[in-house]
Image (cartoon, rainbow, N blue to C red):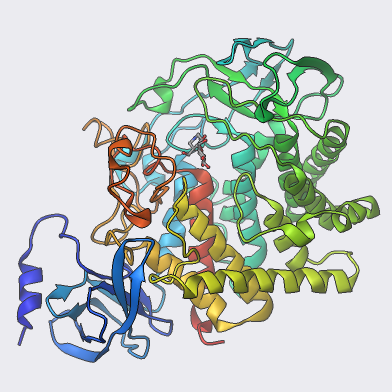
Length: 607
Ligand code: 9MR
């Protein structure tokens, strides 16, 4: 007999079901893994929950675990732990009283397709090549090549603070790479951390017992029959772009000093810029939405080099040099030469800060460069064993002060993760100390999780720009700690982040397009802009929204929400909401990493 409350839920035939108070991972749970749901309920006493199968039959039951007030959402919540139930199936629902969850699966590999689609995002963000129907999930996602030939010179003119930039006397061929996000900018700093994340995943898959996860032929990309790993093929698209952004030897360039620290506009100096790396390629003014990349008619420029962009390139080129050492020795040698040249240039010019004063593209300004220097030194040291770099590493403040976050502006943890797990010539007590440090940081993440009603790696109520990626990056830290020390709670913490993104949150929303019954549909994206203009497509599956943002509510949709939402609820699925609902390469890269980690370690939940 069908349980009556379920009959009511099933009777809803609209495309998108209404939100439930009982939140689950809408794609599902690993058969052998942890299974936690959250119900918002003002009562403080345990409540009876039941688990229903697809036919509406009760297959398990238990009592909820009260948590209490949840500051990140403004709710009072209780948890359901149904990890003991392991029968594989589709269409399960949980119920507490009249609250019925969205349907979900219990499956051997719930995250497998997510890893594949999340990686497919990068192909579809490629610049300069047509996106072909045979490589995408729906025909309407195919599009013409954008910016097929970018021979660009430096920005010349007046910036938003009135400084006059003189430009430069050369052009670089910077064709290709990935578009950053909803815009058509191509940024070295963000491209660097994104490419690094994918290459880092590649390096770890073997250790997780799944070296062939993205072997040739696994992905729908043009290179999928070239005999090379498809994940590496995709990452190389961006590595080539990073290399192309390097200033040729012997070039002199006029750069501004101290721009992001509020120095006087126009404090210019002419320097020997050879080896430095331009920060970005961008349009001279913001383009509107929608706009297919091929229809962008705006002038595009190279923007001035910075030390941070240079060190980003160094880190990734050094990482690439060891990954391709035997696969493609010529490419590896080219990458290593670029990394060495970049390192020398960054040492010569240690404090050239990016300027955020240009119209038409994002700032990615970063006043603190010690972390980029540590990261670049770490990658270059692991690849070359150069003792001078060991001295830089040993003297770096990042060893003691680095925190639990990894982002485009905070890259020290990337260096620590590499030094902890990729074989290198640091003295073994030092490697042991770094490994211990990773575990200690991961335990700090677990401490946050224990204070969070939704079991998130962040307990606070302040959600920043790209909060979903912040959660995913903390999940990466947990994943690396698990790789080192195999504590089950570290892996469980990664599952919690996946569950949160896929529906176990205060909005009962999957932030990933195409995954879950209440998923994101209308990102801030110039091409996946159906909500803005029906002639454009919806996003492909596997794209993660930036997520709740309660701290920078500056767009037209977010501004009126100020004071009316709490942390996690400061989000809406609206294409105009660029502070909350944009998508970006540095957000999808850790999604790929996390989904692939969970899939690769699928039978290790209780290790
Ligand atoms: O991800 C970036 C976030 O950390 C910053 O707070 C924000 C404002 O500067 O910019 C974000 O990056 C955007 C970039 O500048 C331009 N492309 C879209 C990016 C995602 O919104």
